Image (cartoon, rainbow, N blue to C red; front, side, top):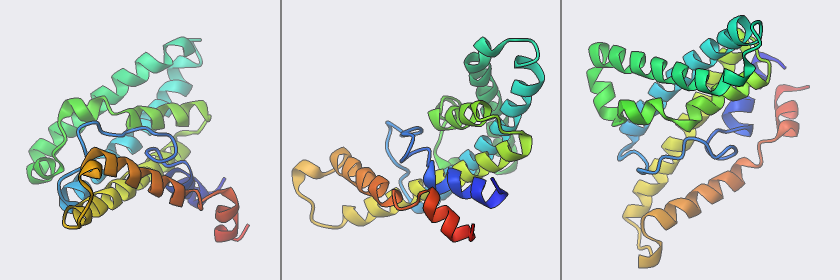
Length: 196
């Protein structure tokens, strides 16, 4: 698979939120488009770095020593360590972005989306380069869906909505319709788009 196909597959076809149902935040969507963009950027960096590190850990430590049974706990610790490092770096270098993102260290470190991307890249046998592309594509898809859902939610806040649908029920309907729309992106679309 080409690098473009890897990026587009993880961003649109195998979207971590809409297709895999990973990273759905029980605390709700970001409050503004700026916070959605900041959170999307933070998660993109975390997904890409964790996917590369997971691929290296799988090929250099777990597989050679026959420790595949420890894959999930090792990746959980890996993601938590990378999340802590990224939060520390962001707190020193870009505190405004971290504040705008509104995500805590605990929510980032325990994100099922990040862990899911690492496991998918590892079990798919992706090398470090492809894992980086998978992480960047998944992060771009996470950013895209989070931004779109935030924009739709902000728009619906000013529209007349029946009382029974306000809040979480409307978010579920929005997510379902977006997932249905993303079904248009399949491997056939990708082959036609890339001219293969």
